[in-house]
Image 1 (spheres, rainbow over the protein chains, first blue to last red):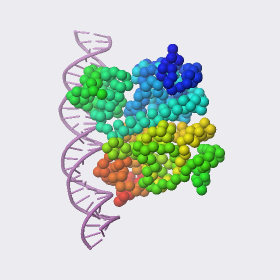
Image 2 (cartoon, helix red, strand yellow; image 1 turned 180 degrees about the vertical axis):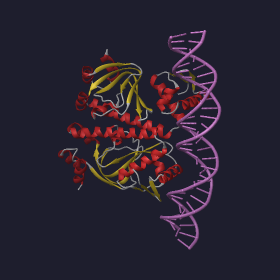
Image 3 (cartoon, rainbow over the protein chains, first blue to last red; image 1 turned 180 degrees about the horizontal axis):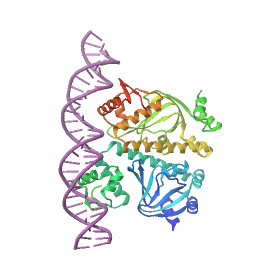
Image 4 (cartoon, rainbow over the protein chains, first blue to last red; image 1 turned 90 degrees about the vertical axis):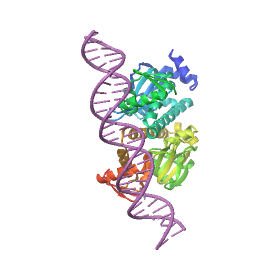
Length: 211
Length: 211
DNA sequence: AAAAAGCTGTTACAAAAATTACAGACAACA
DNA sequence: TGTTGTCTGTAATTTTTGTAACAGCTTTTT
């Protein structure tokens, strides 16, 4: 069962031998929406490979402020976990399950061993770092160069693409947390988007019409 | 001459043998303030090790907008160069010399070879990625959680620490570019900081009193 | 020396975002 | 069924940021 999902998601990346090693040493784990995979300030000694579902990476400041950094989908791993376990440091971010997730946890020791043993693994690890740096750049772009109405619309369309459905189930308050703004601002701008015909508002739900 | 500076900056990180290899295959390069080490959209096939001076990493948007991401000091390398040369991708950022710099350029092939040959090199490369991810996080923090006056003051104090002098030689316009805001806003907030006794303003110069 | 170009301070105004407050709608539940 | 808590829409106000315009300097160029 697990090896099959491993193959589906990583088979085109890794050789048979590596897939088998992963299945052998990895812990399989299931997580429900809302559960925390990684807490701010915690330590981690495993590297997660996502098989199913999606996860959001969130930054927090001292005053309880939050900001969504980006989403992780199946076939991905989290570069901050790499940072965290290779440097043996506290986590700088928190990771929360968005859609029910299945994942495999790889012990750090193995992960380091494979770096030289499997070229494909090395490429995967570096590629992960590169993707994360790019995601961070895009986050910075939205913060530095976009106004709140654009950021809000981007949040909605990104989520639509992520979950593969045009219906987003979030309260205005939840969205406000993700964008680090106030609920009033989100409600106001959502109403504007509705008047422009881009979305349709319901209680706890938003239907995205254009994306 | 060069090997000496190499030893000074990297001797406590790398073994003798690796230092010698670096000196052998690396190109030595000197750059003046204002020169571009890396242009937006360009390709790069070498990884730079900074021996002297400092460099700033800047993000640009389509409309010519700019934003300072962070500074690089001697003993550092640039993770975006790694991204760039290992993935053979266009540069997402531009790198400009802040203080006259000396650096050594390592060909990608060597850099990859050393990953498995020298444990210390592998650690250095991963540590570089980790440091850059952290810097990016800090940049995101300032954008998401701080107001412009705080960002401006942070810019000034960061630069004081970087160059090791309390005198910053920049016009208000240059600072405005770095923070992606307007000159008027910078002038206004600088005046406020001066009234609070934290800085003293001159033409083309700012003296930072508290940091 | 005169002219041009660049830098700073300031004013007035517009736009964007944050804050406070409150009312109506809906859902959960005793 | 009535109460309570949550979610949404809206209005009024303040703070922050962006824009335009201009005067007074200093530095550079002619």
